[in-house]
Image (cartoon, rainbow, N blue to C red; front, side, top):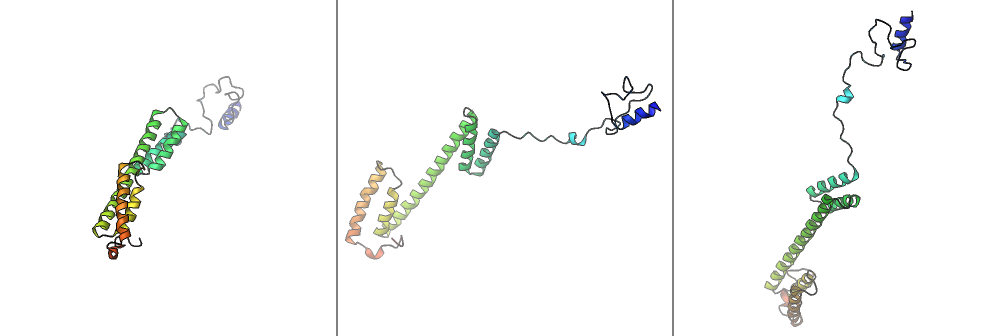
Length: 187
């Protein structure tokens, strides 16, 4: 009867200090070592442990860098720069973050300069058309717009201001007034 009690205690998974009550080695003499009822009789791989381990969640610096690279790849340079600056704030001496911020600032400046050059080219084309059609009102308005794209002390701005003076003469004389406002309606 003692043997049956031990087996039932073992089957119920009740252990006292790693041994069944009244046993010195946890097993009755001559019996095979039983497993607790909750454990399988033979070692098997746990299905949860064979699943691929989830990668560790990246830290804030790594997340910011990854987001920066992702936005840069999409062409959203401003958002990329914001994320690279976040990463740099977390690790101010990190050379990758420093270089990423410098690169984004450079690319953004280049992008702005390309837009600026495109706008200047469009205005220059409109000015050429206005002058060819003798639309002095449009030419003067276009020169006024072009002037804003150049620094006050630049030679290009000085040339535009001088040209604007010539256009003012045509406007004051009302030369070719019938062709005015054909290139730039509403001017």
